[in-house]
Length: 210
Image (cartoon, rainbow, N blue to C red; front, side, top):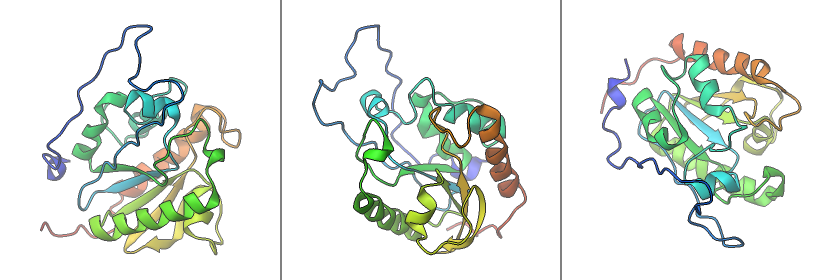
């Protein structure tokens, strides 16, 4: 089903097993390296996060915090056929899923980002969408909707009337365990399943291969 996306990436990060007490490779007080964009042409969905946590940046993989159920949400919603580990994030491309951050700077909390950073990041993501042409863009966090669509009239999760270039737009609750608006796993899962249903419905005509 997802063979169209196989071999779109040539470099796969190896899982790095760290024993207790081992350094993540970034010293205390040192700037965290940004996580790269995980993207390929004409994906089913491009998931757009806010920014990496310092823990994920230190580990080198997205959504590495144990309290963040992102990978479990993808699996139990049906977006991925099995549960990936953070160090297996490159395999998202095999399932037609991309993952990018609006802002690459890692912080302990997204609240530390300025509005200027978010708007600049949104412009960068718009450029990626125009270049790579995903069928659907999923904004990972309700706070991203007004950043990408300042005049948007439909807040909350779900499908939006706006588009990013030709891509449909769907807003997901932030998977973080700190998300007080959507506490618990099940209240988040319902929206990830709605996204999976939208993709399964064939919401757009499949583009011919290039």
